[in-house]
Image (tube, rainbow, N blue to C red; front, side):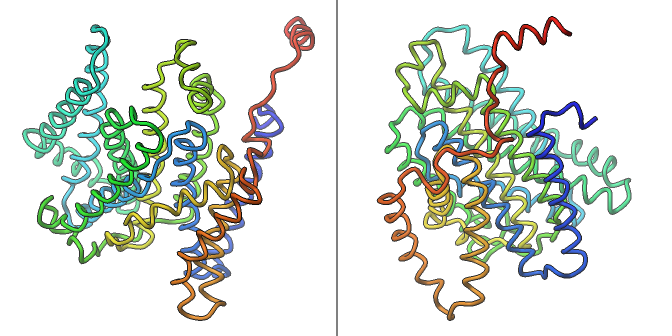
Length: 414
C-alpha cells in the first residue's frame, strides 16, 4: 500500500510513524518526565496556532493579532464540555456540537439565498449569518436541549468508560474548534474588508474583548463552572501523546493540501495583489474569510489540546500580550513557510519555556519582553525573510508537474 505514495509522501509517513513510536516509548519508559512532556505538548499546541496564523498572514497577507482569542474560545469551549461530562452532564457536548452543526447547515441555506441577489451589502450578510447562528444555538440550547442531551447520554454513556472518554474528548476538541471557526466567520465578514493594518488593530481588539469576557464568564456569560477571573479548575487531564500527534499531523496535512489546491493558489494570489486577483475572477472576500476561518479552526483545536494538558485555564493566559507570540514565531520562521513555522514553534517553547527556565537564573523570564523585540529587530535588519525564508521540506513543497512529453509517454504506456 505504501508503494502507491510518492517518495516525499512515503518519507513523511515513515518519519511520522518513527517519531510517534520513539516519543511514545520515551514517555512510557519515563525517560521524558512530566515537565518535558508538557513542553512537547505545549510546543505542538503553539505550533498549530502559529500555522493557522501563517495561513492568514504569511500565505493570505492579512495581518492578524486575534489568534489567541480563537485559541481561548477553543480551550474554554472544549474544557466546559468535558468538565460537564465528568460531572454527569452531557448538555455542553449536545449544545456545542449540535449547535455548531446546525449553524453550518443554516449558513449553507443563507449563502444559497444571498446568491440570488446582486451586490448584497456586507452588513446584510453579517446580519443574516448572525441571526442564523443565534437561531441554531437557541434551538439546540432551548427546545431540543433535553432531547439531544438524553440522546448523547444514551448513546455515549452506554459505552465502556475508556471508549466514552475518548469519544467525548474527540467531540470536545471538534466542538471547540468549530466554535472558534464560527466566531471567526462572523467576525471576519465585516472586519476583513478593512486594510491589513486596520484589520490587525481590529483583531487585537477582538482578543482584548475575549479576555474581558473570560474574566466575567461566571457573571456576564452565566458559566459558573468557569469561575471568571479566578480561573477554571477541574478540567480532566485527557491530553495524551497520541491525541497531540494526530491533531498536529491533521493540521499539517490539511494546510499542506489546501495550499496545493486551486483554492490555495487563490489564497496566495490575494496576498500578492488583491486587484489582480479580482480581475481574473477570484472572489477575494470569500478567499479571505476561508483562510481566516481555517486558521482560527486550527487555533481552537490547539486550545482544546492545551486545556486538557494543563487541566487549568486562566484568562490571563490569553491576554493581548500573549497574542504576539504566534506573530513572533511566524516572522522568525519565515512568512509563507510551513517548515519555518513548525521548527521555530517547537524551538521557541523548548528553549524559552524549557531550557532557559531550567538553566538560567530565576527571574530571567521577566526579561523576555525585552529580549523578544531585540530578536525581532535583529531579524528584520539581518534576515527580513526569516530563518527559513520560503523554504519547505520536500513533502510540504508543491510538486512540479511532469514535462508534457514525459507525461504524454506515460499516459500512452498506461
